[in-house]
Length: 425
Ligand SMILES: [Zn+2]
Image 1 (tube, rainbow, N blue to C red):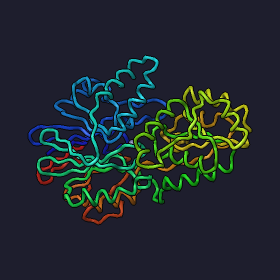
Image 2: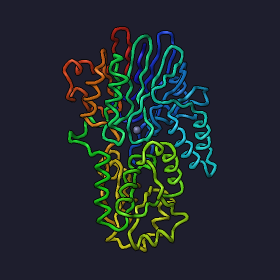
Image 3: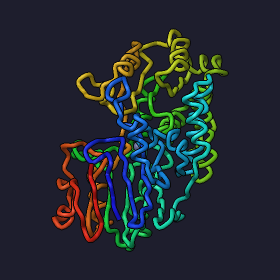
Image 4: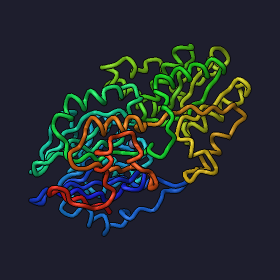
């Protein structure tokens, strides 16, 4: 077996992992874009069709851990080459909703992406999928995308666990270690490929999503009307703010697209947990009078994004609000609005600071804490190697609280171990 880390050994986002069997079967895990730096998309060598063709040459299937843009991004090009693409079924549904929304005005790029997603095959947790002599079994993980997976890959008699992006402090993160204990640890993993986003970020304990909900309740109690900027696909975060709004009796307001996203999440995850049901949501396109009334009484919590719809809503409602009673919660990565940070986005900063409201920062990461990373390494206890990806170049996986024996197995350069060829580009 050959494991090739095409991208991701020294960067967060844009990770591409290839697994090839000795007989030549090849699959890829994740194929997304480099994360943007600042307001503009960053350069990506796979935008060049020749580079992408070389990467996809002989690839039988691409498996996506979850549909964030740094994990899925070349779906039209992959589909054009007749290669099968696999993702979780809720992810597929949400991406069809999103691309359909973006393609509404007939933009050919979004239309092509919509068609590509419609052809995606889906997998289910714990159901093994054979691709010739490689097999892939997905296991659910908690992340800031609601339908994310790690993969157990079996090839040439060896086993690889690819974690994708994951966390332990989300609502469903408590299932992480039991999943590893029940389905993975005893299968004797040879190679662990794991994310390490938080490796070089500080050591302090991360706020759980449940704690974030209680912090939101505190903020909601101090202000009459609240705008919240968060990811429109992060089911956990939306649930936190929805639950907090219910706890203090405020109207929960979204736009028409968000309304449909919450409906989809409610019809899927909501059938298993009341946490993911949003029955009392209103969309502002049709309920402006009711929202204006609410704004003068108990108040509202409105999910907004930096787009035309949200800006129009703010434009319409803000003049009727008292700025001293109005709050804007920024619930995303802080770097985007820190002028000194390399990820700083001027447009996001301007949006957040566009009114006289009070700004609050309330966020917790979608990625594994250092503690959770160490725990996964210890539990999986891989026989041959640990390959850290999705991490900052200067971060050191060996700085985790893991035994020396495991530290010695961390590989960030090409090597061959018991017939497993590891190529790191
Ligand atoms: Zn992600």
